[in-house]
Image (cartoon, rainbow over all chains, first blue to last red; front, top):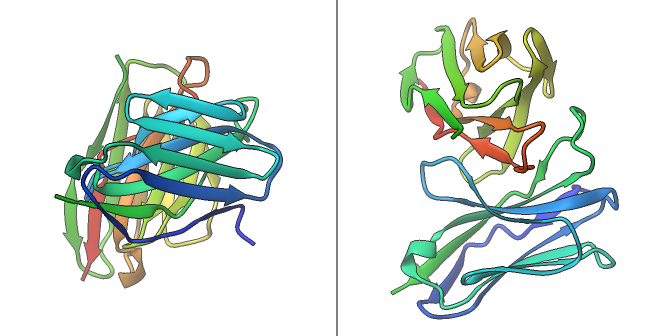
Length: 114
Length: 114
């Protein structure tokens, strides 16, 4: 079983729709949760991060963590064609030691139709 | 501010030829440095990481090697490329002491071995 599972998609939704992206994980030591966005032929960029369970909002993006279910989500409201990209979830245990590596999901490819 | 430079952006190399990809980080000191490979439609595979000059940890046995001759320089090498070495190579750094806990990625090198 992989430590982090993520549906690869592709996911195609019309512009303006609410998008829900999800990951599950098996390692209860994970404490720090991230979402990266990767445009085609570019490196991933950090979109959001959170340390704890609950919701964190940044503009049209909301990250949600449920540690009891080992489940994280990223919601995108009022989706735009510019949101079309691959979204990777990532997580890591704390503290920030040299042995503490970030584990990535395989990514979900998202396409927003105009 | 911190920046990461990775070059070249694109590379086409014949089988059996050597490889050298370079990554440099500016605006920080003593970062953790990482090399990842991303195959088409696949997730991120950690190849090497380094916590200091001359300190290299290998995650996957393969045809590649890494070196860190200076604090902010990370080099990925191969003596003889294989077809299976084709992929998108990403360098990343992690701030040990600043507020950003995630990785910052370079723009990547797309390597095609022919």
